[in-house]
Amino acid sequence: MTATTESTAISAEDRAALAEAISELVTRRGDSASARAAMRHTPRIDRALWDTLCAEIGVASLPIPEAYGGGGASFTETGAVLEELGRSLCPVPVLTSALATAAILLADDDATNRELLPALAAGEQIATLCWADPRGWSSPGVNADAGLLSGAAEYVIDAESADLFIVLAGGRETTTLHAVGADADGVRITPLPVVDASRPLARVEFDETPATTIPSGPDLPVRLRILAWALLAVEQVGGAAAALDLTVDYTKSRKQFGRTIGSFQALKHRMADMYAAVEAARSVARAAVAAAVAGAPDAEDLAAAAHVQCSEAFCLVAGEGIQLHGGIGITAEHDIALFFKRAHGSAQLFGQPHEVIDELSRRLLA
Image (cartoon, helix red, strand yellow):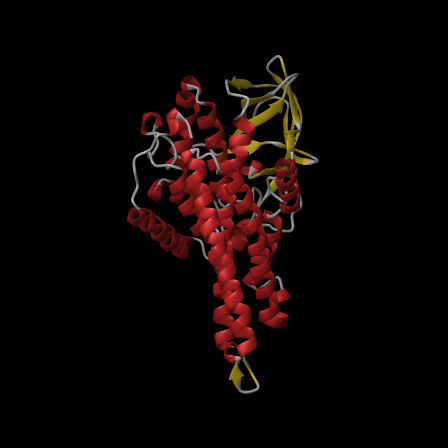
């Protein structure tokens, strides 16, 4: 992605071992009951699980170069972590921490890196990204003038638990990048009601808030969106795979007319279609992450395709899962309902799929 994000080569076997370690840890420390409990708290975060992920596995440090206290891996490894965490819906700020870290690394300012990245790598601070305005991610909701920020950033993920805000702000001519402490003067955080309680959102308002400007290039928003689409896509794949597993397991145990419903051929066909959707989404999501990390010429097109396909696949699989679970599937107590909410909530992030398709169509016709 930039000179500062050069990483140590990690083999596919090591990446698989990382995913397995995440799976074992989440199974041990982040079951459905603990995730639901964390969703009812304010801030809506499983702090104990987050601390363990940082201390035992170093998830926050993975893409950060060793020179700044990180693990020296890459966002490919972060993607492997997110795919596994997507299966659990644990409310931990891995995605938001990764995107805030990415914004800093893409800016590629050594002084900023040395000041901000070590605390993020150690998990001592949680950072999140302030980007959207009420219309979405097409332009920032915050303005910068003489080092002061004013305005409101909408749909800020994990703002309630953040120590540091990395803010995209609209200036007179271009978008600029800034760092602001969550406890800075003029900052107000308003938690928002959400359908998907595993993805806490908030509005963050700035009232002439002093901020540290991070030198960055004009292409940063585009490059950041590419990575955001790609990382969200692999997380969606994990959620879709978990929803499929829940559905298959249920149809193996639920009986009707003296037979398990999974033995009915019509349902086998539907689950086969769900499986095909998950595997196709996994392929394009992983390709998008690889292209984004490598800075490939087709990275933007691949990331856009992944955002659209993985959003649609997750919604399809979760919706089919609700149907195949029958009446119990629409109850709040069953986990398939959580995946259904996550699927539709995730599809709204960083530009809705139909907006992305419209953008791609205009680009092709230009």
